[in-house]
Length: 177
Image 1 (cartoon, rainbow, N blue to C red):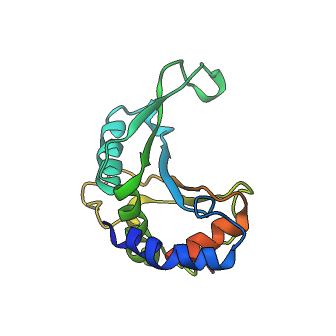
Image 2: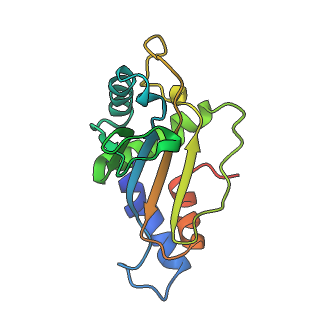
């Protein structure tokens, strides 16, 4: 069992049960999945970038990402139908807890001028973060890095509102302001 999952079961779950006594044990918020996605607008011009970003994303998530394709052609963005426009990976269970642990304890302190994340979520019980570059992850070799690429990380929980989501993430050790 992952260190963070045992912390959730032994510390966070009883604390949330104490805070929300009217809820059933199955209604208490838990981390459902983590989705990491990258938009690759430069990949339209250079096809070798897709392979390098797939390698980087698979190293930091320990799972092979899916290449997302465009659904229809948009002439203003020079995109054709069925063209690679991004990458995404969905982490669940053990990999999700391992990534969350690494993100909170190793990656977040490496972000430049980091003072904590804002406590504003998406009103539905999930929390989203945008990172400017992938260089903060220690798994990525900076010598092999071709270009700096940002990414979005979505922490999807079973919480029904922002208050429960933020409380869950705080108790699990997420670095808020």
